[in-house]
Length: 114
Length: 113
Image (cartoon, rainbow over all chains, first blue to last red; front, side):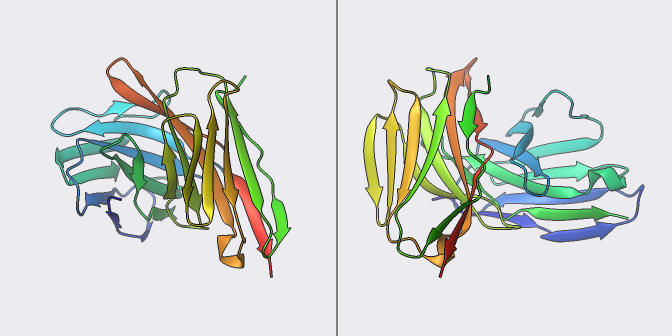
């Protein structure tokens, strides 16, 4: 299957700062990538779907201006959490849509906002 | 009614047992079915992928799909303590030109040594 990396794996920041999370596809050209957040012992919550070269499609209730997604190439999508607050602390996971419409996930990024 | 129902567990079994994990779904449009394993604080790992009714086997894992009953299962043979994780079912369907994915809430499995 496709290999997906995320960077950083863990980040701690002060309230009000912005944090950028990178999601890279190492061996597959991903037209479609997804961003999820996951709270402890809960399931995945889809935040947005990002298509290379076009604007991301956000799920209902997800603030576009707060969670900026850029899918500039077939191997890179970024999620920027702007003006982060403690309630944004979570586990953020990206994935890509594979050749048979399966999803391959990255290892996740743990964000802690103080 | 949720589109996908999955028992959250936890499910505890002794080492070597056969584990059965299940999901039911309501949307007959789902075409692709997946099982993921997620260890704590890690991203989900794709275990099995199927698109037709019937069984698919890969090592100790068998995925079963029954589209007529809208029921999918994952069987783990000779379970090991390293299989202790949360298992997520997922399914997808094509809608409005893009694929829509639905994930189960996950079943926590503990395999006791």
